[in-house]
Figure (cartoon, rainbow, N blue to C red):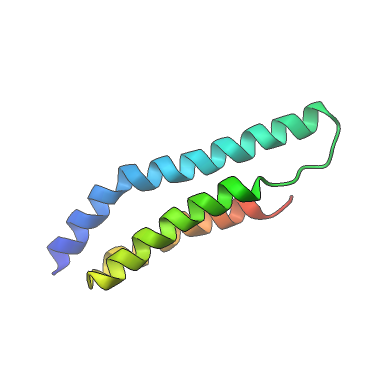
Length: 88
């Protein structure tokens, strides 16, 4: 069972990287636009919410497949995206 979780985590690394990179990209462009127009930064909730939803769906699918270790690993990309949602 441990090998299944490890293989699943390694297989999901590119997907998680792309989803979190999309969130960072959307937040970066939104921050750049806010600084250009001298407006306060507001996180792009639609894009970040969509990215969080993708991570959550993957996590639920892993739970249904009884891959608990891989499902716990899905918390890391979710936390990275939730951190981007805070207006700092």
